[in-house]
Amino acid sequence: MSSEGIYTWRDSLVGFQTLATKEVQRVLRIWVQTIVPPAIQMTLYFIIFGSLIGKRVGQMGGYSYMEYLAPGLIMMSVVMNSYTNSVSSFFGAKFGRHIEELLVSPLPNVLILLGYVAGSVCRGLLVGVLVAAIATVFTHLPLTHPFIMVTVVLLTSTVFALGGIINAIFAQKFDDVTIIPTFVLTPLIYLGGVFYSIKLLSPTWQMASKVDPILYMVNAFRYGFLGVSDISIGIAYGIICTFIVVLFGVALYLLNKGVGLRS
Amino acid sequence: MKALSIRNLTKTYHGTVHALKGIDLDVEEGEFFALLGPNGAGKTTAIGVIASLVNKTAGHVEVFGHDIDHEFPLAKSCLGLVPQEINFNQFEKIEDICINQAGFYGIPRRVAKQRAEKYLKQLSLWDKRREISRNLSGGMKRRLMIARALMHEPRLLILDEPTAGVDIEIRRSMWTFLRQINAEGVTIILTTHYLEEAETLCRRIAIIDHGKIVEDSSTKALLAKLKSETFVFNLREPLAAPPRLNGYAATQVDDTTLEIEISKDQDVNGIFAMLSEQGIRVLSMRNKANRLEELFIRMTERKPNE
Image (cartoon, rainbow over all chains, first blue to last red; front, side, top):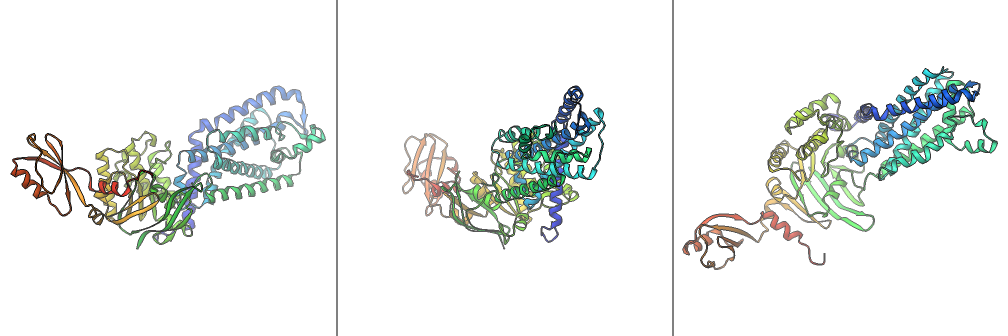
């Protein structure tokens, strides 16, 4: 605070920095839970689907199946880890009541939200980089449109970090934080073009697949690497940005109202 | 200046449970103030509203003249809270808990480190600074919450039952510390079930019951309301027969113990004189209950249908 005891925007910035750093340190402190499991899981995916089965699949989108699969698996780990991080960290703070440290402080809700998003995006990207590094052991990974790759992964990670926070706000018990990842996210990811091109599907299923927002994120990300996509990149950016705006607005509204936080 | 001003504060849970029924309360800057009440009276709800942990239903709260709704960063900057329940991350290090809390108030890390050292030393936790907080004893956890609440050097410190469950030695060291920071200018509001604590520390006391303030006055004025006190006399020899104590309500508890009620217009000298006349020697004498405790029980006594 300033010498006059006034809380300025600089103080808010220090508050945000403190929260974001704390969240990143949490990810690094419990690296056995946050970083190692997705790395092991994705290595197994590369071995089983990419190396063993993939050889029999042949080419997809003009690339070997392993090359086609790699961006999808990277994005899958980014999505899951961004979501899991924010839902578990925010719900943990709520359950342990240390969210009250933030609620009694003058830190604005918008920065509390951004602080948690920053920590989750950091974990998502950290895991994404690690999985990309593992992918390079198994295959060559071209980088056709680096700007698109970076912006899509950043924005997608933000979408799921925000989603995780909203889930945590409503969660009352630990079961509530696993329902969405298990019953909603996993099917959407698996049906979102991680493992295949939707061009392989019948026109009806192609249409059905286009309802899945993860399809746009995975394909835009794959376009960043390989330059091939089943959908328009412009539409993908539009959908991702719309999700960010809507989820950010909802999360901020819930925080301001104190839903699930203030009695 | 008023450190805290509450007007018509109302809180209704789920539309039916009326926790606060329009309370008014003023606490002057520099005061050491006690907010007392039985369990479920509304103390923690009132504190929750002041600290932005509970949404109020209606009313107006100002901290050092700053409205908690419209000037919340300023109001919150003036306020430090030590809650009833442990609410820090049990997996974080003690020093980190303090430094991070300061950060949320906009205090740079360099300054926060100096303050953490100052307050953790004052509360005898400095040696434990690198330990995970869940390893602390109950008393240490309470002191950590006090240190954390002081990190942004608030002008008003609210402590919700800070000495609950701590041994008498730690409780007294906490009293000394709280007196010291009050003397340095920090306004303190305390809730406690140890009425001796309120009587010893606080210059003003408010009693809340059923969501209403039923008493709000200086400790001295409040104690003056006691119409009578009961004293326990321990006698040197066993009594052969009940003593004659004209004008006093006396009860013989056992052979060597008498309980005598003394009203405000009577004195103890008269009792001693009558006992001496009858050859009864008094070994020791004590107040049966804490004076504030007696008053508190009378003021918050439940009627049978309540």
